Length: 51
Image 1: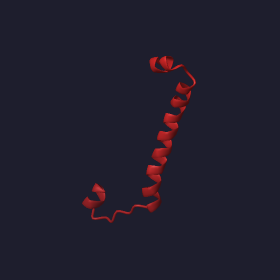
Image 2: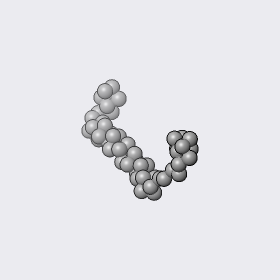
Image 3: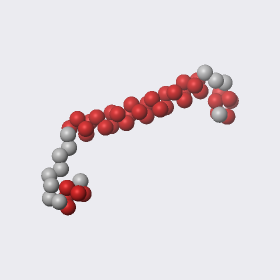
Image 4: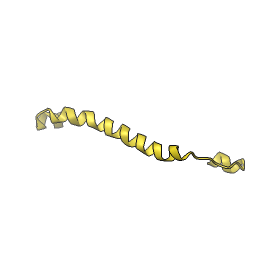
């Protein structure tokens, strides 16, 4: 945005990118949290907190 403002360009943002980026971020966050939580759910609570 800053470069386009300096160069007098018209910024173009594809609507799919505007909606797709938060969805992709949410999916990555969900998958990154799912694996450790599944591992911890199979352990005893004290052991899960220790590791």
